[in-house]
Amino acid sequence: MKGLVATILLYALICLPSASVTAQSAGYGDAMRWYEREALKGVAKAQFLLGLLYQRGAGLRKQDPERAYEWFLKAAAQGHPRAQFKIASALQSGRGVAKDLKLAHAWYRRSAAFGVSEAQYNLGYMLLNGEGVARSPERAARRYDEAARGGFGPAQLALGYLYLTGTGVPLDIADAWAWFRAAETRHTAGAAEARKSSGERLSQFDLKRGETLAASRLKK
Image 1 (tube, helix red, strand yellow):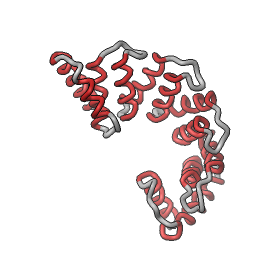
Image 2: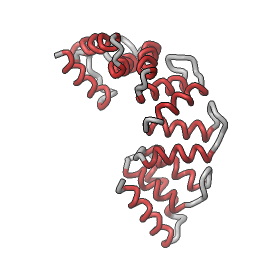
Image 3: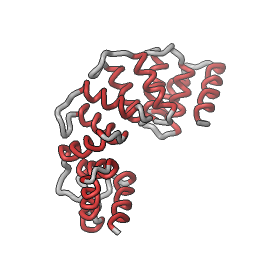
């Protein structure tokens, strides 16, 4: 039964992160005990989920980023991709642990190796802005491209701006328009405005090329 409660709460954590449900009504206490029992056995998934409970303060009086980091680190050390992403995010922001951009970059690379789009996107951001690593618009573009082709809207939007400005990639407004269109279908904030604005700069021929590019990406 407790395993079922934990599964239901996992859904709530992932799909309803801002839900204002009391610990008593949702049974967070049972879930935390169940996750902790499994986490202490060394189960990486349980360690990660326990970290989520501490990070979001579910079943607690307040959020506990330090404890969250501890459990994420245990799961990350076992190769859990999402936990590796959480470790990198904490190190980048300095939440729950001392800020360390170089180490954050290293953990993002581990997570990205498993195809975590958010990690690829954040690597692109760090490379574009020279955070914890030498600035390289070209490498940033490649990271954004990986995440964008995986369907991650923010990466599609960012890659569109790179093509729009010729940063790290050849300037190509039609390609930028196509990426903005892809991001728009993902309901990414700012994508619709970027598509409209860039479209005003295109000839009918280039707009048609952009539509063809967008159509091929939306099929994936």
